[in-house]
Amino acid sequence: MQPILVLGTRNRKKSEELRGLLGDLPITLRDLRDYPDAPEVVEDGGTFEANGRKKASVLAKALGQWVLSDDSGLVVPALHGEPGVDSAVYAGKHGDDEANNDKLLERMRNVPDELRGAYYVCVLVLADPRGEVVGVSEGRCHGRIVRVRRGQGGFGYDPLFLIPEYHRTFGELSSSVKQALSHRARAAERMRPILRRTLLKDAQASEGGFGS
Image (cartoon, rainbow, N blue to C red; front, side, top):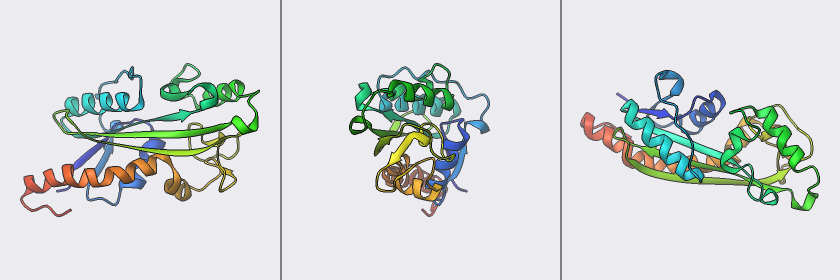
């Protein structure tokens, strides 16, 4: 029987992206939509890693399952790091992508092109069923903030995040290209060996010969 890994998110698009990145592993992937009684974790850490550690630990202990949390966001140096850890609530309401994008565009209205650099950050944190953090990985993706939305794909700030080499935003690029380039893809690639030597090794020991 494959081990279960709970993705610590209720965000359908984020869950789908992680499933695409980790779905080839011999692991049964679920997310918080499968656990309606999972607690809401207050993300009050000052960094992506602090929030990720808290989410993974609290959820894993509450569910009694392995949990992989994802804390991610956009950093704009010209705005002194905004929106940063507040990326999902930048305009006030959690997950309101349209309002968040509107606020970012307004905040950057007078920022010249040469100062519109930005980067996405993703921190993945793996916790065991006791709530102990056993692995952390980080990925970054650098780009620029355009002046108008471009494309309908992705989520979050993707329609504003331009990849210079492709001359397209994440909102315009295909999901396969985004998965190859994104901050989440890079964090997931670094998490894979951690999953193999922890979750899969633990399952192998429990099942007496489970193959990874």
